[in-house]
Image (cartoon, rainbow, N blue to C red; front, side, top):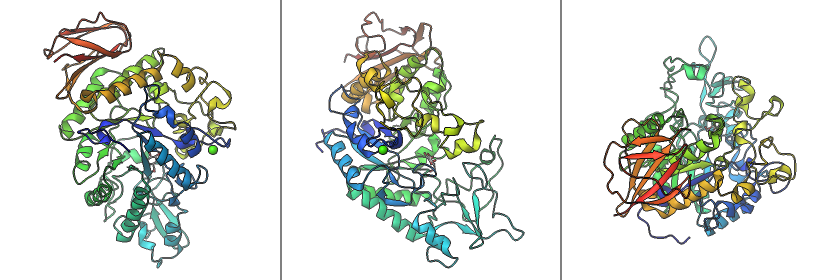
Length: 542
Ligand code: GLC
Ligand code: CA
């Protein structure tokens, strides 16, 4: 791959796009997205011109062999592509064609646990004396019976499953079909190392590491302290079933291994992440990045967003590097989180924020279209969490419905029967229509990403808020040695005046991008007057 000489590595400068393969595009009519579907649509993501989205990397949710109790997050063979998605050769081709377009491929490794059908677990559960017994977390019942402690599973119920054949419990942080590996066993670590090398040698550019702070559990299996919460899992402070001190040695080993291959990276998904944890787990000799999900839990008000951003900026410091997301395959979609008549305007404000912050932005497929959560009737629920908690919680299917490519049959996603229902609004919210409409959410994303690519201040510069107590919107500067960019946005439907808390470094500003193109009347002084839901991105003269 030809790389323009730049000061920051690609994983800091670039934009990551998360593909959820089952729902991206189906190439063989079985109703399930696959590698062929992704290959057919690579130009949509990046064809080298601003007609495409312009993303720099694709994070592929798991495509490994899996019985799919948790839709790929339960792996039965880490070195094989699941036949549902294609063959190993298709993945090689995807890596090749992505690289040709200047895009990287990041695979999603769920290494905290395997599938209960993984041959390692088969062997481990075969007998108490199996050589692989210690590869998982087996424990005797308490003297009076019952599981060794009160730890709960994230998906509901006890985290311990009784195995009648060998009369012991095994631990599963998620489903009983997802037994946790014993990361204290050196053989397990050796095997994982082999898996990582296998993929790095095939040319993948990095990994997204699933629940990367859960690999170790307290060696003494102490009960967690009590906490107020709705579900049993939330009624515990997770002091002993995650975030154990041994993690840092694993991160150091992984970092060393990945760095052997040059310009690659690992991005961690943290269970109950916080800026402090990101700071602790990322940096030299540790993970390259960890997602910050703090923007996802913000209410729709600028103060909440500013607090989340500053908390991350302060915890990580100027050397640290945030990695923000507004959504993923586990959470309700942005347009459904902030619903109403102006949801699409809000989607644009949020997009502008994500793509102009300091840090690596990660978009989830469909976010760029302003997709809503899908409607999944009870009988069509596939997600185990949805099945368990319906109707209190609909589960994660609504955020995983197929990506609508056109207003044609099957929304251009499939010729067959889609595995989850197509969203009812697919005739207006689809790729083909939005590509043609200069005012669509997609067109706005495209312009933002290409602006970010071309601007050093936006992709690498520092961040400085211009408002101490934002009310109507946000205003901040992004600065590199060469450029200053001013970003201002109105979060509401009424016009707003943002009174800046400090003088701007220049009074001469050139319009770069906004939601109201052609608006040249913006006066840039210590007060910025913005129209309803207006976003303005201006470049300062030096
Ligand atoms: C992560 C994944 C989620 C999965 C869980 C268990 O949180 O994002 O989809 O269910 O880990 O692997
Ligand atoms: Ca298919």
